[in-house]
Length: 407
Image 1 (cartoon, helix red, strand yellow):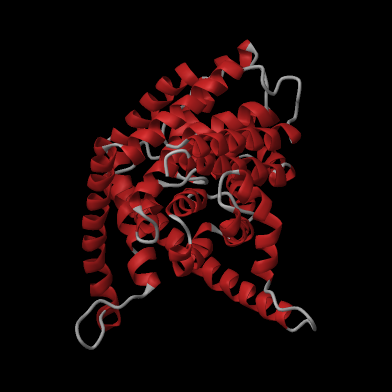
Image 2 (cartoon, helix red, strand yellow):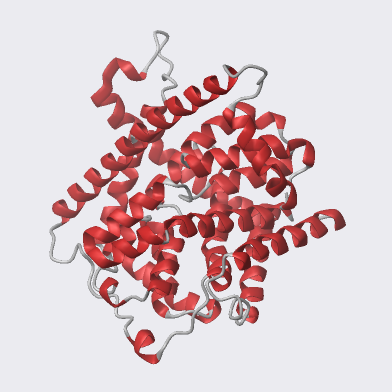
């Protein structure tokens, strides 16, 4: 860590918090819990240091990556059985097919999550993390529980565990829960990310996003809980209660398949549309830049202000914008093609920025999921949808800035 990286990091944090303050629902209360904000920022710095700059952290990440590689190997056996010769080339080498190697393994990991749910291990871990988080977040147990649950269950599944709470939630609390879910990732998709990005950055992003969401929400959506609201924190039973082992296993396998097919469909649609827009820009007389180039120039100042070198800020900004208007997988695929053109610091910052569900398509996913459980709450989510993406994107900006201290 150099003096320059420290200075750039401080500027990046201040810039991100300023952007959150600009959109705050109550600017007078935005920094009321400044002590909690400082503690959360300190925790992010500590975890970033441990995960990226210590032997212990690297060993933990290596073990996690090895574990996911083993799971992906087992998943490959199931894929090969169903897809047959499509998974191998003529010389017997595995075919480099994104759908087979990255998306279909999500089904296997989702099945394992179902087993952990049935054995009550996962609910116990989530509730325990929620209790610990209440000590440092400055928020109620419901918000603390949801932060932990979102990190594991995913942005739509987490609301199923809160279905009894939804009718009681104020708009402020609903925004917090939604921002946490959009700024996180689900455990079932982590293996897919690790095939596209360095595992250390995937793990770092998951952990830092958890705490970063509380920082941003404190500023952009400050509120004071009443005693009645705080008391109404009974999460209730799990939606899987009463189901047999094979019912739960079947449900999670099908959920994994839906995620894989949804991501595949989104990739086909978004990549094709971006190609159309890029070509359309090139057809304009006197224009020699693409749609993504334009997005890069728009986001260039933001990338620079969080610490990415100016010479790399345009390309970094294009990736950030691509993730925002499409999804993280599209941006990750684009990033893989040009990753070597970035410095090590920029690679780290871009990678962690890409690891979250913060994009426009997630508005519909979250609003639809909530609406299916409670109609009025779903309408509320739809109304603050743009602010939701804005806040969740700031979480990713903050995570990238924190990682820049140590990259």
